[in-house]
Length: 150
Image (cartoon, rainbow, N blue to C red):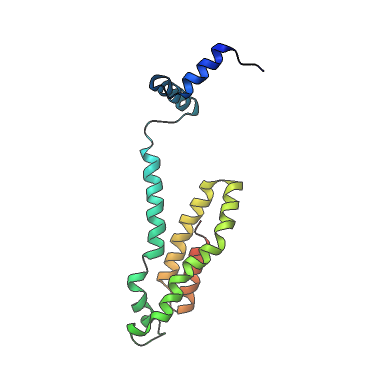
């Protein structure tokens, strides 16, 4: 297929970055794709998701030492570091192990069901962690929370 002289000059004109042509073209593309000007709701949802994800990871750090003492593993908070490491690392270890699985599954069935499952599992396993009576149940709750966190 040969390009006529008029088409070539039109393509060069579009590629040079002329503001009027670029703005019209961008606006037309946005209208074709159904993009709205007010995407701040989507930005807020993404920011909320990031906040929740970071909260899940770090909310336990202030009270892990006293929790280990309460669970009866050690007698004083200063001796709890070894067990605190297990509880802190359980979430990220399980998350690292399962992240590829959740990526593949979300490609197949969609992002929304995976994100909803992650939020629901956070609620369930955070409650399980909060009511844990033994160290083993607490570690299991953190492992499951990490595993089900996409």
